[in-house]
Amino acid sequence: MVAFSTRRFQNRRGFTLVELLVVIAIIGVLVGLLLPAVQAAREAARRMSCSNNMKQLGLALHMYHDTNQRMPPASFVADVTTNRPASWLVRILPYMEQSAAYNLSTFSGTDWASRSDGTNLNWLPYNGLVVPSLACPSSPLPGTRVDPASAGTIALGAPAELEVQISSYVGVNGDYNEDNSQWNGYHGMSDYNGIIVPVDDRNRLTVRFASITDGTSQTVAIGEQSNFTRVRLADGTFDKYDQRASNWWGGAWSGGGGGTSTDSEAYWMNISSSRVGINYVATSRYSPHGIGPYWYGRPGHHSIFTSAHPGGAQFTLGDGSVRFLSENMRFEIFSLLTNRADGQVVPGDSI
Image (cartoon, rainbow, N blue to C red; front, side):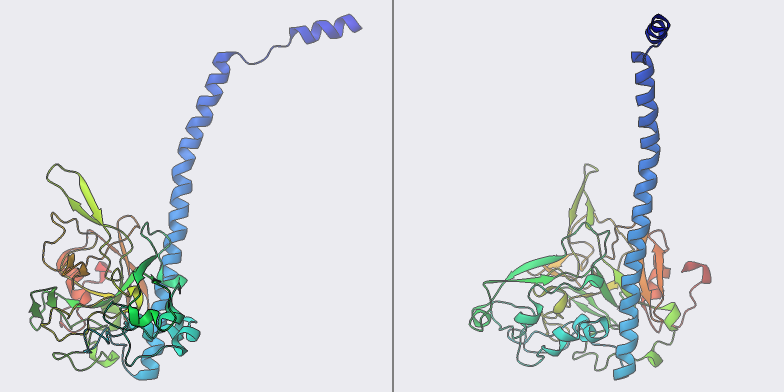
Protein backbone atom coordinates (compact mmCIF):
# COMPACT_ATOMS: atom_id res chain seq x y z
CA MET A 1 0.00 0.00 0.00
CA VAL A 2 2.82 2.36 0.84
CA ALA A 3 4.67 1.52 -2.35
CA PHE A 4 1.56 2.24 -4.44
CA SER A 5 1.13 5.69 -2.85
CA THR A 6 4.76 6.55 -3.46
CA ARG A 7 4.56 5.47 -7.07
CA ARG A 8 1.39 7.56 -7.62
CA PHE A 9 3.06 10.61 -6.12
CA GLN A 10 6.11 10.12 -8.34
CA ASN A 11 3.87 10.05 -11.46
CA ARG A 12 2.46 13.56 -10.76
CA ARG A 13 4.16 16.44 -12.50
CA GLY A 14 4.04 20.28 -12.18
CA PHE A 15 3.66 22.97 -14.85
CA THR A 16 6.32 23.09 -17.51
CA LEU A 17 8.03 26.40 -18.19
CA VAL A 18 6.12 26.76 -21.45
CA GLU A 19 2.79 26.21 -19.70
CA LEU A 20 3.69 28.74 -17.03
CA LEU A 21 4.62 31.33 -19.64
CA VAL A 22 1.35 30.73 -21.47
CA VAL A 23 -0.63 31.24 -18.26
CA ILE A 24 1.27 34.46 -17.50
CA ALA A 25 0.66 35.69 -21.04
CA ILE A 26 -3.08 34.99 -20.75
CA ILE A 27 -3.24 36.82 -17.43
CA GLY A 28 -1.37 39.76 -19.01
CA VAL A 29 -3.84 39.91 -21.91
CA LEU A 30 -6.79 39.83 -19.51
CA VAL A 31 -5.29 42.62 -17.40
CA GLY A 32 -4.61 44.61 -20.57
CA LEU A 33 -8.24 44.23 -21.59
CA LEU A 34 -9.56 45.02 -18.13
CA LEU A 35 -7.44 48.09 -17.35
CA PRO A 36 -8.97 50.40 -20.00
CA ALA A 37 -12.43 49.38 -18.82
CA VAL A 38 -11.52 50.22 -15.23
CA GLN A 39 -10.04 53.57 -16.29
CA ALA A 40 -13.14 54.34 -18.36
CA ALA A 41 -15.37 53.52 -15.40
CA ARG A 42 -13.32 55.79 -13.14
CA GLU A 43 -13.49 58.65 -15.65
CA ALA A 44 -17.24 58.16 -16.00
CA ALA A 45 -17.55 58.49 -12.23
CA ARG A 46 -15.36 61.60 -12.19
CA ARG A 47 -17.35 63.14 -15.03
CA MET A 48 -20.57 62.49 -13.13
CA SER A 49 -19.07 64.15 -10.04
CA CYS A 50 -18.04 67.13 -12.17
CA SER A 51 -21.56 67.34 -13.57
CA ASN A 52 -22.95 67.35 -10.02
CA ASN A 53 -20.59 70.21 -9.15
CA MET A 54 -21.87 72.26 -12.05
CA LYS A 55 -25.44 71.40 -11.17
CA GLN A 56 -24.83 72.81 -7.67
CA LEU A 57 -23.43 75.98 -9.20
CA GLY A 58 -26.48 76.32 -11.44
CA LEU A 59 -28.79 75.82 -8.48
CA ALA A 60 -26.84 78.44 -6.48
CA LEU A 61 -27.25 80.92 -9.35
CA HIS A 62 -30.99 80.35 -9.36
CA MET A 63 -31.25 80.83 -5.61
CA TYR A 64 -29.18 84.01 -5.85
CA HIS A 65 -31.50 85.28 -8.58
CA ASP A 66 -34.58 84.40 -6.52
CA THR A 67 -33.18 86.48 -3.67
CA ASN A 68 -31.81 89.44 -5.64
CA GLN A 69 -33.86 89.33 -8.85
CA ARG A 70 -30.60 89.44 -10.80
CA MET A 71 -27.55 87.34 -11.50
CA PRO A 72 -24.41 88.13 -9.48
CA PRO A 73 -21.97 90.63 -11.01
CA ALA A 74 -18.76 89.21 -12.40
CA SER A 75 -16.92 92.38 -11.45
CA PHE A 76 -17.52 96.09 -10.99
CA VAL A 77 -15.60 99.33 -11.22
CA ALA A 78 -13.59 100.06 -8.08
CA ASP A 79 -10.27 101.53 -7.05
CA VAL A 80 -7.91 99.48 -9.19
CA THR A 81 -5.06 99.56 -6.70
CA THR A 82 -6.66 99.15 -3.29
CA ASN A 83 -10.24 97.94 -3.72
CA ARG A 84 -10.30 95.25 -6.41
CA PRO A 85 -13.76 93.63 -6.41
CA ALA A 86 -15.03 90.20 -5.40
CA SER A 87 -15.93 87.58 -7.99
CA TRP A 88 -19.40 86.22 -8.71
CA LEU A 89 -18.34 83.01 -6.96
CA VAL A 90 -18.10 84.86 -3.64
CA ARG A 91 -21.67 86.11 -4.08
CA ILE A 92 -23.15 82.62 -4.38
CA LEU A 93 -21.28 81.07 -1.44
CA PRO A 94 -24.30 81.28 0.92
CA TYR A 95 -26.16 79.00 -1.51
CA MET A 96 -23.33 76.46 -1.57
CA GLU A 97 -23.21 75.72 2.16
CA GLN A 98 -20.45 78.27 2.69
CA SER A 99 -22.36 80.85 4.70
CA ALA A 100 -19.67 80.91 7.40
CA ALA A 101 -17.05 82.35 5.04
CA TYR A 102 -19.53 84.68 3.36
CA ASN A 103 -20.84 86.08 6.65
CA LEU A 104 -17.27 87.05 7.60
CA SER A 105 -16.71 88.79 4.26
CA THR A 106 -16.23 92.52 3.82
CA PHE A 107 -16.97 94.06 0.41
CA SER A 108 -15.96 97.66 1.03
CA GLY A 109 -12.44 99.01 1.35
CA THR A 110 -10.76 95.68 0.68
CA ASP A 111 -8.62 94.20 -2.08
CA TRP A 112 -9.94 90.78 -3.08
CA ALA A 113 -6.91 90.22 -5.30
CA SER A 114 -4.49 90.32 -2.34
CA ARG A 115 -2.11 92.44 -4.36
CA SER A 116 0.94 94.12 -2.89
CA ASP A 117 -0.64 97.58 -3.15
CA GLY A 118 -3.94 96.74 -1.43
CA THR A 119 -5.11 95.32 1.88
CA ASN A 120 -7.15 92.13 1.96
CA LEU A 121 -9.59 92.43 4.86
CA ASN A 122 -10.91 88.97 3.99
CA TRP A 123 -7.70 87.03 4.33
CA LEU A 124 -8.86 85.06 7.38
CA PRO A 125 -12.02 83.31 6.04
CA TYR A 126 -10.54 82.71 2.57
CA ASN A 127 -6.96 81.72 3.33
CA GLY A 128 -6.93 77.97 2.70
CA LEU A 129 -10.67 77.77 2.00
CA VAL A 130 -11.38 75.02 -0.54
CA VAL A 131 -14.95 74.56 -1.77
CA PRO A 132 -15.14 70.99 -3.15
CA SER A 133 -17.79 71.81 -5.74
CA LEU A 134 -15.42 74.26 -7.47
CA ALA A 135 -12.95 71.50 -8.37
CA CYS A 136 -13.35 69.05 -11.25
CA PRO A 137 -12.08 65.65 -10.03
CA SER A 138 -10.60 64.87 -13.46
CA SER A 139 -8.49 68.03 -13.57
CA PRO A 140 -4.71 67.55 -13.61
CA LEU A 141 -4.22 71.19 -12.58
CA PRO A 142 -3.47 72.46 -9.06
CA GLY A 143 -6.54 73.33 -7.01
CA THR A 144 -4.93 76.25 -5.18
CA ARG A 145 -2.26 78.89 -5.64
CA VAL A 146 -0.10 80.78 -3.16
CA ASP A 147 -0.04 84.59 -3.28
CA PRO A 148 2.29 86.79 -1.22
CA ALA A 149 0.33 88.90 1.24
CA SER A 150 0.73 92.66 1.13
CA ALA A 151 2.30 94.60 3.99
CA GLY A 152 -1.11 96.00 4.90
CA THR A 153 -2.61 92.51 5.04
CA ILE A 154 0.27 91.16 7.12
CA ALA A 155 -0.26 94.05 9.55
CA LEU A 156 -3.73 92.62 10.18
CA GLY A 157 -2.18 89.36 11.36
CA ALA A 158 -2.04 87.48 8.08
CA PRO A 159 0.87 85.16 7.21
CA ALA A 160 3.38 86.16 4.55
CA GLU A 161 1.65 83.92 2.00
CA LEU A 162 -2.03 83.26 1.38
CA GLU A 163 -3.41 80.10 -0.23
CA VAL A 164 -6.42 80.70 -2.46
CA GLN A 165 -8.53 78.26 -4.45
CA ILE A 166 -8.49 78.13 -8.25
CA SER A 167 -11.87 77.26 -9.73
CA SER A 168 -12.41 74.67 -12.47
CA TYR A 169 -15.55 76.53 -13.55
CA VAL A 170 -16.01 80.03 -14.96
CA GLY A 171 -18.97 82.24 -15.71
CA VAL A 172 -19.83 82.87 -19.36
CA ASN A 173 -20.00 86.58 -20.15
CA GLY A 174 -20.82 86.34 -23.82
CA ASP A 175 -19.95 85.99 -27.46
CA TYR A 176 -16.82 87.65 -28.86
CA ASN A 177 -18.45 88.13 -32.27
CA GLU A 178 -21.42 90.14 -31.03
CA ASP A 179 -21.77 93.63 -32.57
CA ASN A 180 -22.08 95.53 -29.29
CA SER A 181 -18.84 94.20 -27.82
CA GLN A 182 -15.94 96.61 -27.43
CA TRP A 183 -12.30 96.03 -28.20
CA ASN A 184 -9.92 96.29 -25.27
CA GLY A 185 -6.35 96.28 -26.50
CA TYR A 186 -5.06 94.76 -23.29
CA HIS A 187 -7.27 91.70 -22.87
CA GLY A 188 -9.39 91.18 -26.00
CA MET A 189 -13.03 92.09 -26.59
CA SER A 190 -15.18 93.32 -23.72
CA ASP A 191 -18.32 91.21 -24.02
CA TYR A 192 -21.52 91.73 -22.06
CA ASN A 193 -24.02 89.52 -23.90
CA GLY A 194 -23.71 86.44 -21.69
CA ILE A 195 -25.38 85.57 -18.40
CA ILE A 196 -22.65 86.51 -15.88
CA VAL A 197 -21.35 89.95 -16.82
CA PRO A 198 -19.34 92.76 -15.20
CA VAL A 199 -20.80 96.11 -14.20
CA ASP A 200 -18.71 99.02 -15.45
CA ASP A 201 -18.89 102.21 -17.50
CA ARG A 202 -20.38 100.33 -20.50
CA ASN A 203 -22.76 98.01 -18.69
CA ARG A 204 -24.79 99.27 -15.74
CA LEU A 205 -26.85 96.22 -14.82
CA THR A 206 -26.42 92.52 -14.28
CA VAL A 207 -28.63 89.98 -16.03
CA ARG A 208 -32.18 88.99 -15.15
CA PHE A 209 -33.92 85.87 -16.40
CA ALA A 210 -36.23 88.12 -18.38
CA SER A 211 -33.27 89.45 -20.38
CA ILE A 212 -32.20 85.95 -21.48
CA THR A 213 -34.48 86.25 -24.49
CA ASP A 214 -32.99 83.28 -26.33
CA GLY A 215 -34.18 81.07 -23.49
CA THR A 216 -32.40 79.75 -20.43
CA SER A 217 -32.25 76.27 -21.97
CA GLN A 218 -30.47 77.69 -25.02
CA THR A 219 -27.81 79.78 -23.26
CA VAL A 220 -24.80 78.62 -21.27
CA ALA A 221 -24.12 80.30 -17.93
CA ILE A 222 -21.07 78.42 -16.61
CA GLY A 223 -18.31 76.63 -18.49
CA GLU A 224 -15.54 74.25 -17.59
CA GLN A 225 -11.85 75.19 -17.46
CA SER A 226 -10.27 72.13 -15.92
CA ASN A 227 -7.34 71.32 -18.18
CA PHE A 228 -4.20 72.78 -19.69
CA THR A 229 -4.35 75.00 -22.74
CA ARG A 230 -2.30 73.27 -25.43
CA VAL A 231 -0.09 75.11 -27.91
CA ARG A 232 1.10 73.26 -31.02
CA LEU A 233 4.73 73.99 -31.85
CA ALA A 234 6.29 74.10 -35.31
CA ASP A 235 7.82 70.65 -34.87
CA GLY A 236 4.42 69.10 -34.13
CA THR A 237 4.94 68.78 -30.37
CA PHE A 238 2.88 70.59 -27.78
CA ASP A 239 3.47 72.95 -24.90
CA LYS A 240 0.80 73.25 -22.25
CA TYR A 241 -0.07 76.09 -19.89
CA ASP A 242 -2.44 76.72 -17.02
CA GLN A 243 -4.42 79.65 -18.46
CA ARG A 244 -7.59 79.36 -16.43
CA ALA A 245 -9.48 82.59 -15.84
CA SER A 246 -9.22 81.84 -12.11
CA ASN A 247 -5.43 81.55 -12.06
CA TRP A 248 -4.29 85.00 -10.97
CA TRP A 249 -4.01 87.01 -7.78
CA GLY A 250 -6.96 86.19 -5.52
CA GLY A 251 -7.91 83.02 -7.38
CA ALA A 252 -11.59 82.10 -7.31
CA TRP A 253 -12.44 84.99 -4.98
CA SER A 254 -11.24 87.91 -7.14
CA GLY A 255 -13.35 89.64 -9.78
CA GLY A 256 -10.30 91.19 -11.43
CA GLY A 257 -8.83 94.65 -11.68
CA GLY A 258 -11.94 96.78 -11.33
CA GLY A 259 -11.01 99.25 -14.05
CA THR A 260 -13.25 100.87 -16.67
CA SER A 261 -13.86 99.08 -19.97
CA THR A 262 -10.76 100.33 -21.82
CA ASP A 263 -8.43 100.46 -18.83
CA SER A 264 -5.42 98.16 -18.61
CA GLU A 265 -6.82 97.19 -15.20
CA ALA A 266 -10.12 96.13 -16.80
CA TYR A 267 -9.11 92.50 -16.66
CA TRP A 268 -11.84 90.19 -15.48
CA MET A 269 -11.38 86.98 -13.56
CA ASN A 270 -13.47 83.84 -13.27
CA ILE A 271 -15.41 84.59 -16.46
CA SER A 272 -14.71 84.06 -20.15
CA SER A 273 -16.40 84.53 -23.52
CA SER A 274 -16.32 82.49 -26.71
CA ARG A 275 -13.59 83.53 -29.11
CA VAL A 276 -12.40 80.04 -30.00
CA GLY A 277 -13.89 76.57 -29.70
CA ILE A 278 -13.88 74.11 -26.83
CA ASN A 279 -10.42 72.60 -26.19
CA TYR A 280 -9.00 74.82 -28.94
CA VAL A 281 -5.35 74.08 -29.72
CA ALA A 282 -3.47 77.32 -30.30
CA THR A 283 -0.33 77.93 -32.35
CA SER A 284 0.77 80.66 -29.95
CA ARG A 285 0.13 81.21 -26.30
CA TYR A 286 -0.97 84.77 -27.10
CA SER A 287 -2.89 84.35 -30.35
CA PRO A 288 -5.64 85.01 -31.07
CA HIS A 289 -5.54 87.95 -28.70
CA GLY A 290 -7.26 87.40 -25.38
CA ILE A 291 -7.04 83.61 -25.06
CA GLY A 292 -3.86 83.69 -22.98
CA PRO A 293 -2.13 85.76 -20.33
CA TYR A 294 -1.58 89.47 -20.79
CA TRP A 295 -0.07 92.33 -18.82
CA TYR A 296 2.21 90.49 -16.41
CA GLY A 297 0.32 87.23 -16.75
CA ARG A 298 -3.25 88.27 -16.15
CA PRO A 299 -5.89 86.15 -17.88
CA GLY A 300 -7.37 87.46 -21.12
CA HIS A 301 -11.09 87.98 -21.62
CA HIS A 302 -11.38 84.87 -23.80
CA SER A 303 -9.47 82.17 -21.94
CA ILE A 304 -10.27 78.83 -23.56
CA PHE A 305 -12.95 76.49 -22.23
CA THR A 306 -11.01 73.30 -21.60
CA SER A 307 -11.76 69.96 -20.02
CA ALA A 308 -9.95 66.81 -18.94
CA HIS A 309 -13.01 64.79 -19.98
CA PRO A 310 -12.34 63.28 -23.41
CA GLY A 311 -14.13 64.83 -26.37
CA GLY A 312 -15.51 68.09 -25.00
CA ALA A 313 -16.41 70.00 -21.85
CA GLN A 314 -19.34 70.43 -19.51
CA PHE A 315 -21.52 73.52 -19.31
CA THR A 316 -24.32 74.65 -17.03
CA LEU A 317 -27.21 76.19 -18.96
CA GLY A 318 -29.28 79.08 -17.73
CA ASP A 319 -32.06 76.73 -16.63
CA GLY A 320 -29.63 74.92 -14.32
CA SER A 321 -29.23 71.78 -16.41
CA VAL A 322 -25.76 70.49 -17.29
CA ARG A 323 -24.75 69.41 -20.79
CA PHE A 324 -21.58 67.93 -22.23
CA LEU A 325 -20.74 69.88 -25.38
CA SER A 326 -18.53 68.29 -28.01
CA GLU A 327 -15.23 69.90 -28.92
CA ASN A 328 -16.24 69.20 -32.53
CA MET A 329 -19.32 71.40 -32.29
CA ARG A 330 -19.41 74.03 -35.01
CA PHE A 331 -17.97 77.20 -33.55
CA GLU A 332 -20.85 79.38 -34.75
CA ILE A 333 -23.26 77.18 -32.76
CA PHE A 334 -21.08 77.44 -29.67
CA SER A 335 -21.02 81.24 -30.07
CA LEU A 336 -24.81 81.35 -30.24
CA LEU A 337 -25.03 79.37 -27.01
CA THR A 338 -22.88 81.92 -25.18
CA ASN A 339 -25.05 84.87 -26.29
CA ARG A 340 -28.26 85.31 -24.32
CA ALA A 341 -30.05 87.54 -26.86
CA ASP A 342 -28.79 86.97 -30.40
CA GLY A 343 -32.31 86.07 -31.58
CA GLN A 344 -31.15 83.05 -33.56
CA VAL A 345 -32.42 79.52 -33.22
CA VAL A 346 -29.94 76.89 -32.06
CA PRO A 347 -30.60 73.50 -33.72
CA GLY A 348 -32.10 71.07 -31.24
CA ASP A 349 -29.50 68.39 -31.91
CA SER A 350 -26.63 70.78 -31.10
CA ILE A 351 -26.90 70.51 -27.32
